[in-house]
Image (cartoon, rainbow over all chains, first blue to last red; front, side, top):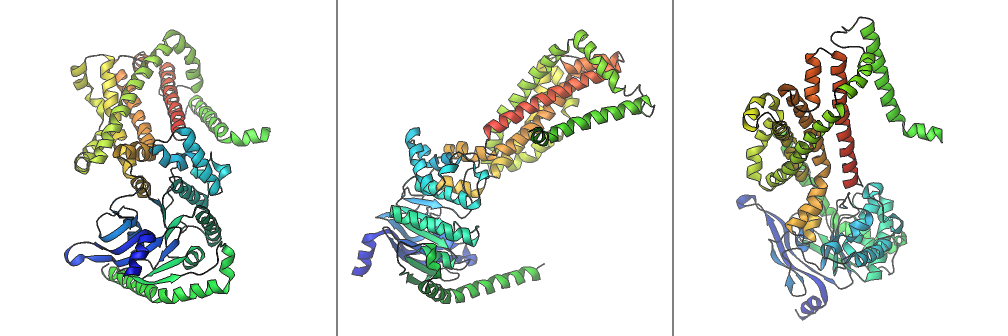
Length: 279
Length: 254
């Protein structure tokens, strides 16, 4: 109990017994079921689980987009029930504004805050440089690749200097090589800023490559199955994927995930059969 | 250098070449007696009529009159249609109640209601402008609703995560996101507006190019009539080129 209290005290983000149900009456579906874990200051934590385990629901709760839930998501003593300035969100889908240049996209949150133009351009420039897009400041998103657009979104989130960076499968639409290289970029930024980061993903290698700890979720209802400490050296690059230790972690987590993923697959197959039977 | 220029300008050059070829084919068909020259005069006669129409029929003044009516009616359609579309987008009840009616308004042959408008506004440019405005309103309203409703949810979530106010959400995310669809509505609307304006000018024999076409047709001056129609096409092209420029200026990245 005392240890729990200490953990909470040093945590940047506390997820405490969170439950989220959808629907009414007999149609109630529990998406997130008594989920608890903490993220320490400067720590990189990933939440991994099969499709349908409530990862995105958890992302929306932590980001304040789903305010109606049981339990508590806390930053300090504050329970989150609406978007919080301490949390910066990066979405799975491409979310740059096509009508704005890269620098105007990145400076957008500062524009909303009423920061003076010269200052917001300086800050935007700094973060664009950090994500490696310095020569594309005047480009429009339509002129960029998928990976570059996601880096613009990350820079736009970082420019507000959020206490917690919350990402929902930001590289899901990218190919494996780009994903590994962007993983390097994220690791580098996270270490440079000592940025507390929570990544929601279904990608095992991505989670092991980037994380200090991995929260493994069960298939519906989403519960915490296990929390795995990733004891790989830092600073870390994508070279780590060739190491024995990396393979060991991937295999270990896959052992946990296989059963859940199989349940998910069986569930979607039976749902598809039911739909086919009903024409 | 010349090769690059030709490749870049190929679509325009091809378009002009197609137009010239069509004119030549028509010329041959009319002169060969395949097409009755008392229905469609030879294009060369129409070309020769241009000078007469410009000098004797004060075509520039008439173009100006039609263009002014077009600017007022088209501009009013945008200024009124976009806010109505935005209001309908905000109210699901109003949207469901009104959408079909507005769709019907877009399809209605408003030109035929000119006697009613004549009674209400008199035989004046006011009648022409109001009829153009009414006919141009529906496409803008419908496309504004469609554009706002088709904003990608992730962009709205970005706005929510940044705690944007409803006004910021509208002006900084919803409206810019909807602009391409709204411009499609404006293009449709202005087509309706121009058709209505020239049509009503023709029917009530008042104002700019429509009245001129009426007069030339009454005189059975077919080359002149077709030359007048060419000027209507030119006014239309001018408006659409201007609209394209405004669209490119407002949406540089698209």
